[in-house]
Image (cartoon, rainbow, N blue to C red; front, side):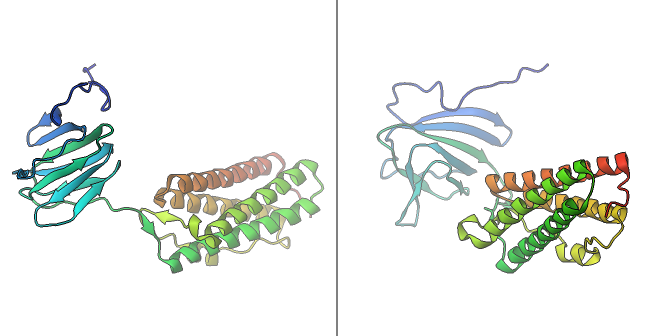
Length: 275
């Protein structure tokens, strides 16, 4: 097995740094990655970096100010901030934190100019956002009412407990979705806006009803659980917030569990005519 190098960006830093410290970590062809450590250092007033290559740099710890030639304003940087400085854009470090280490990770590279930037997740437009949540909430309402009615009417104790549990969980799902819809601070952010085709799938599917034969109603309920599972998975995949993504993955897992339990019961007892 090849020797895999491993190190820590926050370790092995010299105790004495009379000057800003530059360390090349990886270099290959026209790409070089380096670590930069500052302790209150700044560029000399008359010195400007003027590089023949692009530099992408991210601040890992500390604070700093970056000055670009031609601008009177200093760009403040905090941990997590990154900047892409094109070749020959003159710049200097205006200041770095004096009370600790400021650690940078810089990637130097040459480019033909065709660069695509990562875009921060942004809120989906309100109309699409509301439609997705309204359709999902309506699905949860229908499922919860159906399961509760079945639980009240079935004669088998095992089925009664199973469907009552489904009804309780669908009510919880509905409240979670209503929370996203009604509270501005819970607005869902998406890294991309997929086409969920929710309205088409809702319109094409019949409504659950106790007027159906038990086998037909349960078969339809399983299909709806599968559709809900798929929609929540799509929402999770598109969501740009880790906590919200976790919520949708948990909702998808619960719907998958409902479907599996009904499939097992369907196989075991065939859902005789119990209502």
